[in-house]
Length: 281
Image (cartoon, rainbow, N blue to C red; front, side, top):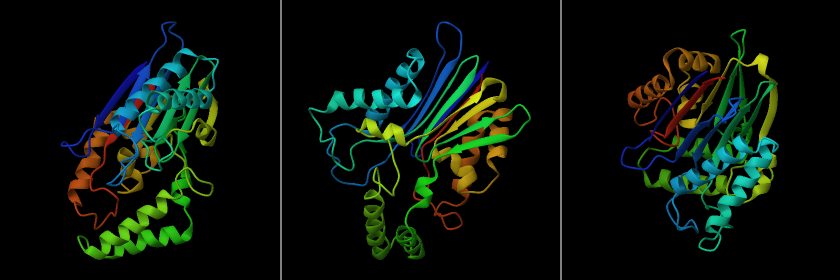
């Protein structure tokens, strides 16, 4: 078995909001990986006294423990229980109904001798490598399918001069429009304080014989494909398999440095937290 992980903050002066982990049960049969990408809230009140890293550490740790040691639970059941457990730890101190309460994207995979289960919620990705060399990307595309008027707002923001007051104001309006669609019908979903969101995840199962590798990516690492267009998902998985997770992050950092203002490759953050988990079960 081969297991490699790499994670790096987008800004060395700020805490990394991603969470990465792999666990192998003492029985020696199977394992589980969990990757979370914490959602950076806009400036202002979040209704919570805790940071995003505090939240991702607790949610990720609970998800790892539940999915690894309670194999009678499905991955959505484990995620729902992890969300409930995490919410209970700060329910008395924080307003968990606040739209900006700490939240995260989720990728999880669990393998046994018979099958590989997967779960993806929001815009992180899981790449399932096949024995024949092909790659099946498991993606939650709802964030890319927002209503046309919201996508038009995004384009309008990017058309305005960087650093201008007009762009800043338009960016705030766009942010509010996206925020209104978070964990709402017709929008997209992230793991926050409502366990029911687990049923919104993209899930499935693959026979173990049909899985050669698993590559989990936060969107900060996945931008090598989705933002910079340096290669396909298959190319991305091949790069990680050949050179390791840090090599992919290094290439993302090089692409970000080559376009620091986002002129050639528009993006919400010039640099983002980037995490990769690679497993050959």
